[in-house]
Image (cartoon, rainbow, N blue to C red; front, side):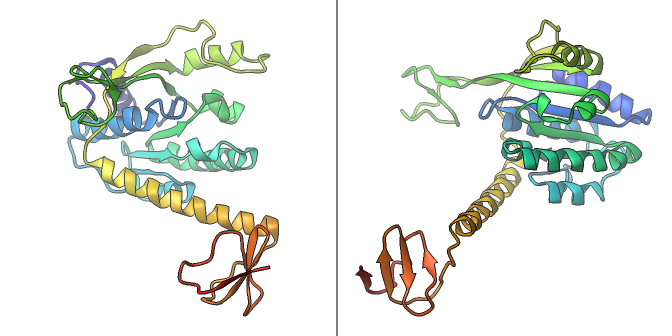
Length: 288
């Protein structure tokens, strides 16, 4: 949970004041994989925004982990509501998808601006965004740069969760360390990176604020886990389709006899092929 007198809380209260004066607010949360940008910052910000600032229950559609759901959630958003997208950690790895995300954000920004929404997008890097968009639209960047895990005071091991593998609950709690940059500071960072091949936030621009936050463990966590698991299954299904397309293999679902041919199995009945072992109860498998 975010402490009410912390630097992060002060920033969120300022944002709320700006939105009440009819400004929209586009926030980007960044950090390397596993550093805590989602569980440390993203979910904590949403919870604090609704519980401490708005003093209301957290709406069901305040965040998404896919572009499709994010766009759908924008329809129900109203002034001062959060609409979050924890998507780019998976999607920005390919240029094709990066372009898709950037185009979607450009289109969504009109809705965000008109509705005066508080929008949070989670990305691996600030520089994954379209150059024009990151310069003109992003009002705040919160960067998670370090994660410190729990440390057991009995056995000395570092771990995550509520109980050390040794069984002890006596531990020093871990945290996520962050830095925040406003629009003016971000423009300086962009300028200093203009001719750099490898772009970085570490170019001598002092942050607006910094601090630490603990891992989020509240009511949003089951929802977040469910959405991420569903997305993982969709990703695996898409991967299987891509592999089948690349190898031009028709995946067979018959409960039939198979021939083992090199790296794939072929169905006797329809000639369909699979690169993974057929169902365990398929019957005999003939080696050829």
